[in-house]
Length: 259
Image (cartoon, rainbow, N blue to C red; front, top):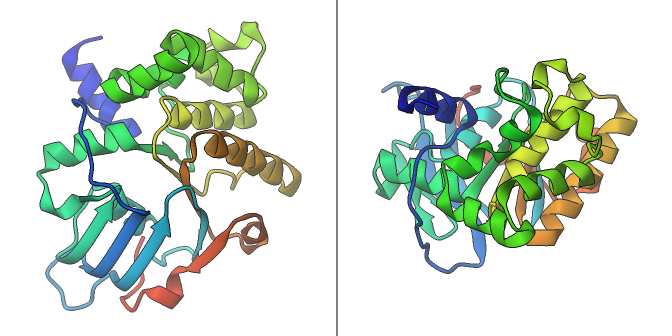
C-alpha cells in the first residue's frame, strides 16, 4: 500500500497515522462546556452547547431530527473540527487545545466509528477492512494482538461474534456482501483494538426494527466487554429505551440547525 493511498484511506475511515498517546485520568469520556461552533464567521452558530457530559462506559442515545446538528456534534467530539469557543474534552484530552496532527493521532487511538453509509473500502476484503484501523494506530494494533494473538485473529473473532463466521465470506470483497453484512463488517472495524469510545452515526437506518434491535444488542455486548463508551446518534426515538440515557440535541443546543 502506497503512502498516498494510505492517506486517502485514513481520511475515509476517520483515522490517521499515529504514535501512542497518554491522556489525563477522568471519570468523563466526553465533556463539553460553553461550546460555540459555526461553519463561518456569522453570528448564528450551528451549535451552542453550554454543557454536555458523558461518563466512561455509558451507553448514550443522542436524538435529533435531520438537520439538527448531530453530525456536526460528532465531528467536534472526534476532533475533526474545532469550535470557535468553549472546551471539548475527550478522555481527558482537550481536543481544541492540541494540533490537528495530534487530534488525528488521538482519534486513531481512542475512537471507533460506524457510519450510516459504512465507508468500507471496496477494493479490500472483509478481513482487510476490519483490520484497517490497526494500521493507523499502534495502540489498537497492540490491543488486538494481545487479545487474540495477532490482529487478523482478533478480526475473525469479532466477525464471528457479529454473525459473520463463514470462512467463505471473510476473504471476499465487501462489495459482494449484503447491506446487513456490510453493517456488521463496519461494526467489527470500529471495535477492533478496543477503542475507548464508539460513535455510531445512524448505522441502522437501512434495517427493519427487529434487525436494528438485534444489532444494537450485539454492540452493547462488545462495548461491555471492554467498557467502551457508546455514543449512538439517531432520529429514531423507538431505539432510545435500549440505552442508559437519552440526550435530545434540541434541549441542549441553542444554536441554529445544521448537519
